[in-house]
Image 1 (cartoon, rainbow, N blue to C red):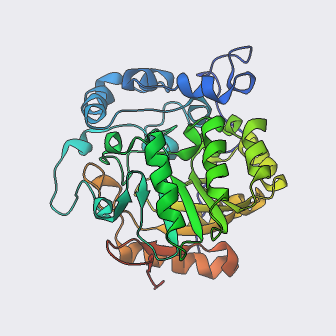
Image 2: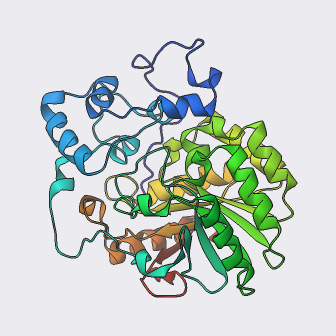
Length: 354
């Protein structure tokens, strides 16, 4: 029998939050919310009523290696006083990040070897990744690109033209994946320009967007974004990234609904993370909550061994066992595919359930 972890979605202590008013997130633009994200470890600890004498030194040391960034709507879903809150664990730097272990490397997917031109990564036969920006709305501590040299991939107008030229010369590519960073951290004027350019490449069929923003700042799904989504001729797929059911609240559901009304197919990818979602009850609940919100569970990624994040690692054997338990209680379409990305392979590598 699977023991389901109770999921905190509605009921919570809100005494740590600012009172609703003109400065509350629901009354602000997504750009304002993004600009006001917490970027100081001490501030986050204070907001969540966690003892600085216990957590601050490790948080500061981890912050020096990979800076903290957490937007207000995501903080509002955390449980104050709980250092093991699954949302907090994803964003709070800790002392373990400074430990160097063999096998955990700066570029675990060897993406630097797959760069075709500035901003364009070719790892797969029919798909190309377009690195629109290095900026994210939230800095996840387990990110496999936490060491990626984004400064070398800032796209000029000439770079943009070279990307379109490269895509036009590759008729086998039928799908472009907007990635980053988080592509939706870019303003809609620039995204609209990109989509208009991609529309001119005749053999492109699909536009896929990988983003955490509709989850961590639901206000990002605004009229300007929906305008360019509605205008493109390309099939539209948005892959959100949700690791725990407590990440989804009513504002997130509303954002998903607006996207679906614009004809966007919604999928989710998760990473299996120790101390966050490494039990079958949480993963099963996540699938149910996602589907209720109009999102189909897509991939469950094995942890990529990136330097500074070894404390999140879950073995493939344990991950496969969890998926086997999910298969016993969920319909097949709610069980995401457990995969690992192996450098040099032309697709994700499935990990069989055991």
